[in-house]
Image (tube, rainbow, N blue to C red; front, side, top):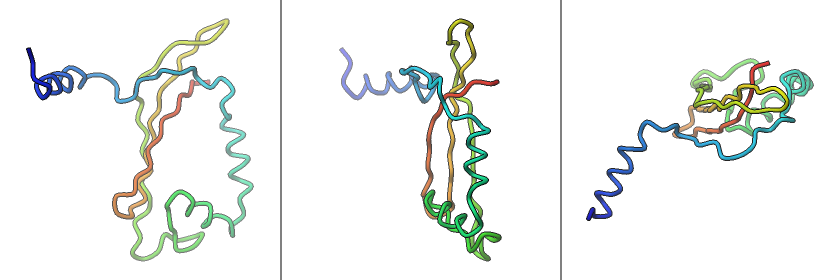
Amino acid sequence: NMSIYDSYKEFVTLSAPLPRFMLARKAHLDAITVETLLTRLRGIKNDGVVPFLEGFGVVPDNVNSWGDDARPPELQFEIDGHREMGKPSHHTWYAIIGRLNTGHGSHTRTWMVERRMA
């Protein structure tokens, strides 16, 4: 005999210790490797750096400077759990939450990926 409001409060209280992201899909076993990503990023020439960063909401003054009044972006990573999967041998897959705060108002990009340690 709980009201909807009391039920909601109970739900919030009981779910507080749970991870913020629940993994309900298969891990990407064919995910891009670090080496492949580095090769792609190294291919960006100096004149392509500013447009590349602007695509993520980061606006540097030029390729060598954030600018006098600009705050550099803040990149954060957090581990939000793990699971065992894989055949024939199991590997530990980690849920990694990334956040990029560009310093422009409240513009923050958040994403989650699953990766395993090599």
